[in-house]
Length: 545
Image (cartoon, rainbow, N blue to C red):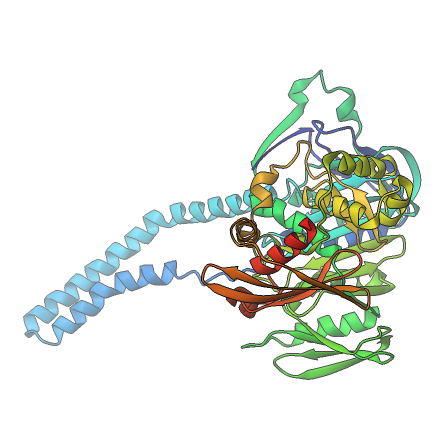
């Protein structure tokens, strides 16, 4: 997927003895989006933006050891070992000749190292340079900055596409706001810019600007503009869409005291497991402190500062726990952490409350299970057929104020909540709307200037394609029953020569909260990789009737 960007110069941070000036260069090809103000919470902002950087550079994928040098040495030794073997079985004259050849070989090897030494050194420096250049390439869309009437927020994705970060700053973070225009833009960002952030100090006046000047002189001085063309993987875009969809799903929520989060991260720092399982078990009992069990040591921590206020006793297990180290830098400035757990092996969200800022860390089910490949959470979101005109009416109503709840929009337009929720879910999946997990509102956030190619993104799920095929080829009837405000669906679905017993539970917001199926896909994965094709077909058939 090709993205074109055009920046007026580079983002930069100018520092002197008394002031710091942060100036981000936005993409001038997008609708004018800018913000100019002066920071009030300087140190808190420095730590928060640095934690966002930690998300960007995070890459916990397994990297095998580099054995190239060893294999090269092994190749050189092979001839020596072969000569030793032959020498043991030959006469003395042959042994002397081999010894002479070995000395000559050693001389050749030394000469080779002497001649190729500068080349190898230059090659290493070259690849180090390429690594730095490639690393900066990951920053082209990181972060995405959105300006709204009540806040400015940054979003980013990790290199391994398993971690998502969002930093929201309301306008109390600034002592002075000169001008702003709402919208979403991409900024020119690099490793050197992060290094400059570390120079922010509380005693220095710090200005913050998403530069508006690039939009004023777009037709002149074209040589001042820097154009960038990026072939961005579909997985990056799809991952962003899945994060927003996962945020709308029902979750178990509780708060952790910063000291408890420190103890959790500290224990993981002090001990490293040599073998699995490598999970955290959150033991939640109503009215009692939250407990965390560390596997494989089975060490249990009781967080007395963090009571669980939920109504149901349960234990939830999550993996990829070392990604929580991203939050360590926020511990001194956080008042509390709100945890949202979707279920065993499902995504989790950790929200750090930083006064007038919030930092959201979204983690996929486990590190290797990135957001784009194995989490079809958009398929579990509200799904009701809504005509195009009504969808556009709902989106325009949201865009008028830039943010809002589905209930408020439904009341304003005289529509039902499930119709509004399904329409907003569709815009979320199209990259035009994001769900704010902290405030519980939908926000306009258009990920790209041009509409995303949803034909290539929408059918990334093999299960949904199979579900469409099932509805066309194998008709079936659905049994529906409402119990305790939850819609229970059941059907026997024939897929080729096998009939599967499929059941799903849909809440009053039209979200799938649980389900079961006798197919191999569900038995192996549950809902950790999204619903199977039979659960999807069951729900789609119910919506058609």
